[in-house]
Image (cartoon, rainbow, N blue to C red; front, side, top):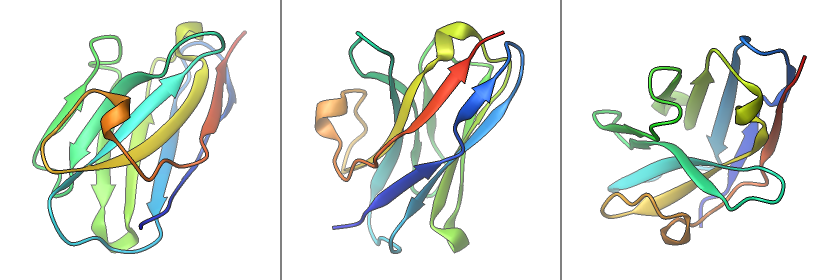
Length: 123
């Protein structure tokens, strides 16, 4: 099973940007989606964005649409989450995961979860 490792989190101020990375342990053949999810303290894990393995389809939560961009670099087995115009409401642990087959917005349908990277937006 492929393993995913997130990085790139940190402490930033409102309005700043961050780029998260999700690196896969090996190249995967087949149809799959890489999803980004986040979980704030005391809240449920929520969908943020996802990308089809080829990059031809991307999906975003309404709360991040226009501010976040998901992209991939196949040569590096890496999916990125570019986050702009960050607000305190974006503070959470961010996770990437994989889903094979059809797209889903449900975290329970994803597997191969990374350990997460913490994003804190505060002045």
